[in-house]
Image 1 (spheres, one colour):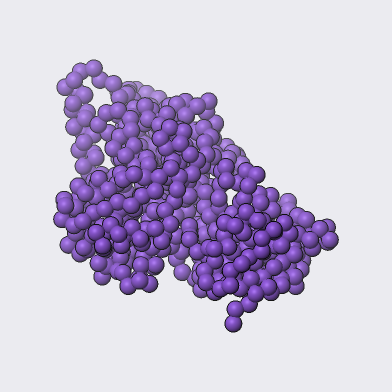
Image 2 (spheres, one colour):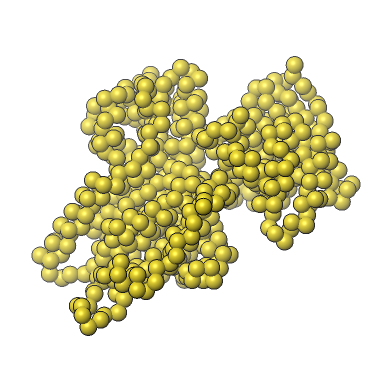
Length: 360
Length: 184
């Protein structure tokens, strides 16, 4: 039985994490995502499901607590906003190198540096291209509604454990702070110790006589072994690219032009589509839901249908690089963005489409 | 039906909670809703505003340039949002503290002396519900039975004793709304 509520994106994510059977949350407050931990604390998760909610002494401590929890096969998560996520990058790289599952929420605010507390999408590069050191990838999910904030907590854990890989939910201040109707899944029980041993035989659950000890590490000083490890990682990422691409197309069937946008920008573009239609302009929307794996094929196919693509992002032009790689110059691709915490208005987006794509 | 509303005033006037009660009531009536607040430094000592959208269809952008209705509760908000009302749209304002009254000729304008009435009745806490009543009188998009449910959902259980007072304030507001300028 699904339950209907009106919630903020941050709250919906927190509630969904509890219901997904999470074992532990470790975080440090920062606007605009502080409601995640506030909500978990108010819910007294330790009483409700036995889930630990802990305010760490810093972001660095929080991500390393996630590292530790994940090493034991537990469902663990953290959340922060841009400057805090930068602090967590070393830990994220170690978690990726050690092939551990976890969910990391980034409610993005404008940067660089301390920047602003208003919404932005300027962490696309950091989320999809690395951020931490080394050849690693996170699975990156981009919610564009409060419902998806809830859905991606559960989906995040599912994918994280399926691939033994960190999953980032890349949201932004607008989705985190806004309230919408949300349908919540029923509570899943947390796994018992026996179930964890069975489901995650690699985890450090205590050595028994009948098996070798499990070692969780990202270190190997022997280069040939390290290269082998890297090859296996790359094979895993290729599998993810093959199997986990997710996207949504809206009104693309008979469109002359297309917007490509994720998260809040995709919502703005949906309104821009309505405004453009009033002016007789047929434009559709392609919304990547997974930013890694990026929907390369679906974007490439669009070049056969539309005369031009406007990539709309709340940044100076980041996802557009992936769109350009996928479209290979076959159609005109331009960028429209606002920075520093400014959300573009639907009218601005229509004007940009007219100037940069239709008229240009 | 899609109703795009901006509610704007001082922090502490109950702007955000008015929006939340309206949105939650919409959920109870099985509508699509969104509630997008201003947050952060904008709210401190200055204006607080929230965009509420109630619709029968999936809501596109939660952030808008133009609104069907603006509910304005202080001068800064009048300066900022008068020009964002769609032509033919609705502007409701409380004249308390307003030094420059609305000047648009292409919209319907109503005033509601909610602050004064709240003071008279000793209902300062439910000032925002008086304003909401005025809005619902003009645009009865949500039934009162759903407003009741919305209040139950929005207010913490310990405040459920105040629901009758809130509903009384809404009824008071319905009688208080006053046409200033009506288009044909």
